[in-house]
Length: 152
Image (cartoon, rainbow, N blue to C red; front, side):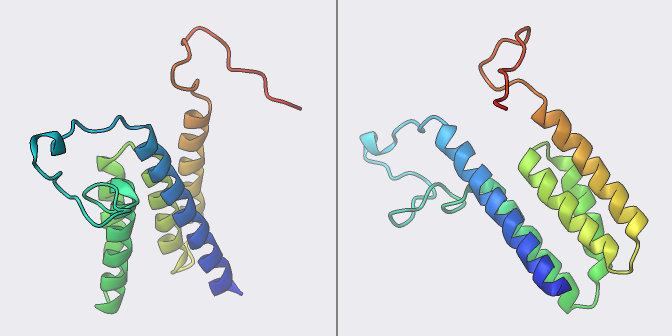
């Protein structure tokens, strides 16, 4: 039961991560065309590839790297060392999607020895950051205007 829940949670997090990365990539302006000068774009891949980090962008690449590191640490019997990597990532990024993913992963690691208090504290920190981000006005909206009314 617990493995099923964890698998579903991980799938949900990866779905959110992929969606966020795609949305961010779709909003980015197209790069200057090097092809106009007969030069291929760096990182060009087969059709359907979107940039140097594959179809999901750099956020997805970070999540993939973290998952691979977690797996390798677990295989080598050094599961606890991934916690330091998670803290390092939190210190280096302000990307809300990545921070949310890392907080969830960190809480899962903290639950392994059944340290529920530490896991709860981690998730509460994540919740606080998510609430701050959710309360920011949408991009392109003047700072002095109230956010649009929510339908009831």
